[in-house]
Image 1 (cartoon, helix red, strand yellow):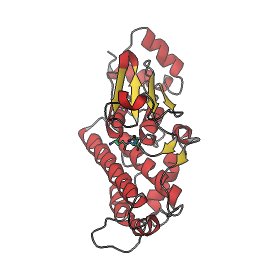
Image 2: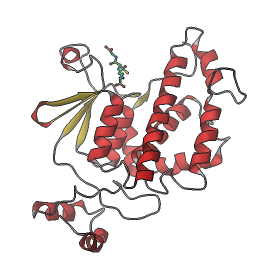
Image 3: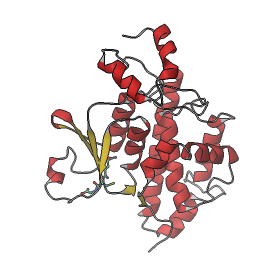
Image 4: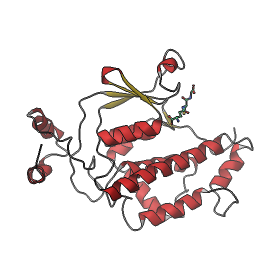
Length: 262
Ligand SMILES: N[C@@H](CCC(=O)N[C@@H](CS)C(=O)NCC(=O)O)C(=O)O
């Protein structure tokens, strides 16, 4: 195992030159024992990220829904993971999946797991994106759950029996609506948590930050100016969106949720 002193000396050499890291790893240096963010963070600090040897495959349709965050985590976390989008569904696959649904993640030695958030946690753990300290972990986890709340709200509005346009109007409303937590309320809470930081994790890009970015990406795909009312959230969205790995993960992925009734 590498001592902190040695690691700190090596750190400047490592990213973005993963070749060096690979050579070191091949000579027996164990990086996986260290927990640090998976990419250059928004403080501009160079941080080493793991490059998993194991090959994983995400199976999901090419849309911004339940398979999107897992792939963003995998890409930013430099996990060796491809996304199989051309699916014969249900075909033979449905019966093989743990819960009869997608996404599933497959890997070496017959590895297969379902449930999108479990996949998110699994990949984030592999990529050391769950945070080093107790406080970082707690913040990242609550943001992943917040992502889930936002996605659930979008799903409800998308399939609302009262009509999608009306339900989406309510979700995007800037006035309070009885018994409904609108996106505005979510934004108020999130901007309080963000404060004047670049990310929710003090400049690091942890799984929770990526989860909120993913929710914002989907929401802004429905309503482009959805973050204009909260400039710090908008700045977060734009700066994380400028990250090349985040950009790469979303390339060619279509919207799934719709803003209006068909
Ligand atoms: N809780 C599951 C829900 C998965 C789910 O609803 N998958 C849908 C697509 S988003 C699906 O596979 N639908 C096809 C089917 O049920 O046959 C998760 O988060 O992974």
